Each structure stands twice: as C-alpha cells, then as structure tokens.
Image (tube, rainbow, N blue to C red; front, side):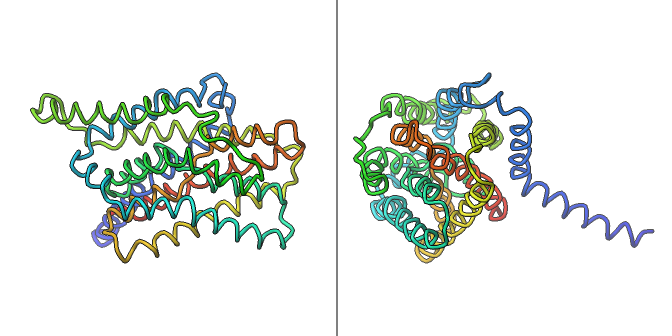
Length: 333
C-alpha cells in the first residue's frame, strides 16, 4: 500500500500542475460553450452589449492595471527602441499581409471560395487588438512593458497604414480614420495607462495600497471579451454558406496563426531575450476585427457575398485567442 501511495503523490502533483498551466485555456473553452448556449446574451447589441462593455470598461481597466504594474522606465526604454518598433511594424503591416497574399494565390488554385479568402486578406491588414497580448504575456510571464508599447504603437499606426493596405486588397481607397473615434480610443487606452502610472509612482511606492500582482483581474476581463467574440461568432449568418466553407475558414485560420507564430519565433529568437520575444510574439501575431468590420460593412453592404467575406472576421480572432491561450500556457515557466 505504501508503494502505491508513493507513486500516487507525484501523479496527483503532475495532474494539478497541468491543470494550473492550461486552466486558462480550459476557461476559454468554457466561455465558448456558454456562448453557444446563450449567444444573444453577450452579442453586439445584445442583452449585455459586449461591444460597449469591451470598449468602455474592459479595455480601460486593462490599461489602468498595466499602468499600475509596468515599470515606467521600462516603458520608456521600449518606446525608444527604434529597431524593435520598426521590426514589429514591418512584420504586422508588410510581412503578414504578404504571407497571406501568397496563401490566397495558392488556395485560389485549390478552388477555395474567393470571397472567403478576401475576408482573410482584409483581417491580415488589421492592427492588433488592445487587450489580448497583455493577458497572454502575463500567462507566459513575458515582458509586459514591451507588450503594452508594441500594441499601442502598432494599433495607432495601423489606423493610417491599414487603409493603404486595404486599397490593394479591396481595390478601393478607404480614407484613414473614417469610422474610428481616435479621441475615444485615446481615452480608453492612453489616459488609463497614464493614470495607472501616476498612481504607481506617487501612491503605491508608499505602500498605502497593495501591489497588483494577481493576474486574475486582467484574465477575467479577457474572458469577458472572449465571451463577446464567441457570441458574435456563433450568431454569424452562415445560412448562405456551404459547410465546407465554414470548415475551411476554421482550418485556414488555425494553420495561418500557427505559421505566423512560428515565423515570428524564427525571426526573433536570435536577437531578443526570451521575455521580450514572447511579448513580441503575442503582440504582433493577433489581429483586431473591429477596424475591418466597418470597412467590409461599407464595401459589401447588401451584397450576396457579405456573409462569406465577413466570416473570417468572426472566426479568426476566436481561433487566435484559443491558440494563443494554449500557447501561453505551454510556454509559461
């Protein structure tokens, strides 16, 4: 009996470690199940308007927490690291659209739906989302300051660069900043970050308040965002699509995400430390669907191809989030 007890101890410990490592990924799957049961609850313009909650509550609270825990000096050093910022901008707005363009040329010969591929191209021209990389970096114990700076610089830069890329994808020029409230975006990201840094520098240094060390707050916020994305993905109008189109969209999204992640790792592993490498990986390989949605609504409103073109903008962010949380758990120490 004692021999069995000796072997059961390490086994239970290993099982608990695996559960702890991949617990967040399992939470994502639970959100997906809940969204499939009650999608009307968290959809855009639903009972709980997920879009409004994300924009006005989740994103500002995420950047407020970032200001409370990120070292201001490290934030400044990252902001002045020109080579790193140039690399990330080239990867996001040159290399990823180019890779997707090559994939589209290849898949067109394989008779994949052209309009489905058009939606994939549009999404690969988009900037990264605001709050995904911060949480995934905390899971993988990556450099948070690098994640915050890269996300903000590349997203605000994308407001001007993405319309230029979309000219080549859609064949029509889209004026920069149309449909984007820059002031509102600054209020939800930059201002909370500055407030958090101010509180950290002037209040938390005296230990009047406890340090914000627990990652569960930001992880809970991202789970709420994920639930909103899952609800919108479940409710997408796919009645005019063939089942093979939906399956191909999911498959292409997963394969594409794995490919760009591997490409980023290969390009960065030789000159970046591990913490910064992981921060760059989670910051530049994810795409925000929000900016592309209004572009496609304007370009294909009333078109019979609108559901097909919009499908990747609902599927790909979900696939990126699931694969990202799984990868962050696998790479965490």
